[in-house]
Image (cartoon, rainbow, N blue to C red):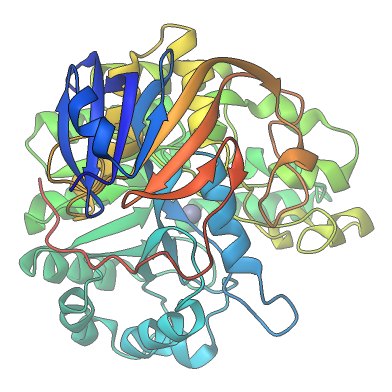
Length: 467
Ligand SMILES: [Zn+2]
């Protein structure tokens, strides 16, 4: 029996858009037809959606949500609610240091996975999964990788930089072993030798304020590391996903790798598509710290190159790299003169993905609405082994967003639901608004209000990745 019919909206898939009705049965899409008025008469619920866009829920494959602690028991839950408000129905988190992982969890992938499960079980309002961070402080991560993939964690991430960086040889071996098992390594590509030298030089000159952060990690530092990771994928034959690609120079490396037949995909993040290095001119170090992310924000030419990459397929997907740091807590020491290299890296974005992509991508004509859906839902689900999600298609989970394209508003931190205390997009005018969100056919957002429940979200087991 039909539980729900969504009537009269424009159904958008990666392949095309059409006005149609969508029926839901047992949590899955059971029909997409021009006229389901028959089933609607006996359905338990009908959502009128004339004039609305019907989109698959976004699948955000890059977040650094914090797990609950005794002091902040709602942190993970609240960020999952924020994601839903923004039109995201599934998100993947990392357990890198700072997100709540203990030293024991950092030393062992299997222990880290168990710890993260225990910390997040029954906490999320929407579906969610994990990508493990493979720390350089882990005892024997290579031996543990097969077990983590078998446990539904098809992707893990290695960092070439930071104090938990992975040595090159281990990174190569991790990529190879994951690929052999149907998994995929995600890599943060910046060159550690160049980066350390850049930071040391700035500090020696007394250039310690947050505004000096970008000059220490210019695009070639990213590009040379991206090229090396792609060479690793080429030699190993394994898939590679380049996270948060930020520059035209690194994009050129991805294009070259794809042309050479390497199994590489790359991700853009909204911050690099909207903001530029001009934000570092902010004179107040406490506010400037809000833009301390790695890689740093780049020149306008880089930003424009990324949009071209999204349009022509050189970039494969968009994810947020959400870090719920607060100017008043994690980044607060910037106000007291803490040097830029010691300021917590990252910026929030779990709630603003769809708003930014629709406004700056679709409304401006840089990408089509179909391409947007592909970039934020369909391709991330496929590439990360998330079966049954990422598209509006009969048989898949009814993860659906009813989006009002006519709405207009300005983004304000005070209106957002995440656990950060700011947004990098403060004051930005955006078009469109998320009206309703369904996860597996259940109401999570209705009329812009959260009506879901804590613990409804299911852990998504993933494998294998494709491509
Ligand atoms: Zn990240």
